[in-house]
Length: 186
Image 1 (cartoon, helix red, strand yellow):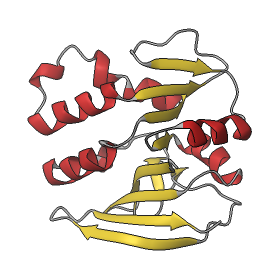
Image 2 (cartoon, rainbow, N blue to C red; image 1 turned 90 degrees about the horizontal axis):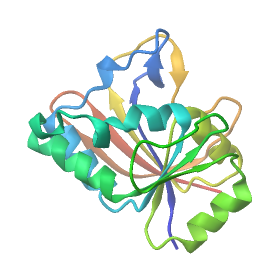
Image 3 (cartoon, helix red, strand yellow; image 1 turned 45 degrees about the horizontal axis):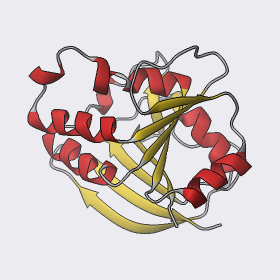
Image 4 (cartoon, rainbow, N blue to C red; image 1 turned 90 degrees about the vertical axis):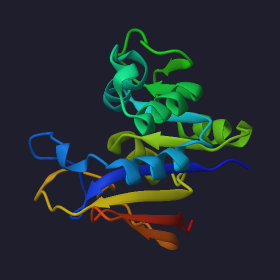
């Protein structure tokens, strides 16, 4: 059966964006990006909230994609090859291929998506992921910790939800980033 995976780059103090909404401190170098590409390669479907989807569309819509480094062009191809489901009440149309809008996050429908999937799914965006965590849908957590504490902002993990996790893997990178891979214990 497919898994629902939450993968995010986060500050050491647990934020995906600082209090001003910036995440420039989270930019991976070539080694980290290549590693993340390999993690993303088996994903068949990305589940996004509207804001995360709008941020990610650059991987298909940026007219300068051809000028990107090889490892970022590789990520663009991986992202474009996957299906995307955007959970949004306000998004009127999508700007990328292989993408559909679902107006409401319903745990039973997401469970069905997971059960019917031939490949793993990922969930992106802290708010949408929080709903999935609360519903007990997330099977694995992949965090890339950036060596910075930003002091506040948008949390990577939901407040008010207990998560018991089992460490499956870890990796250190020369730029100070650390990868942690957990299975959720349900």
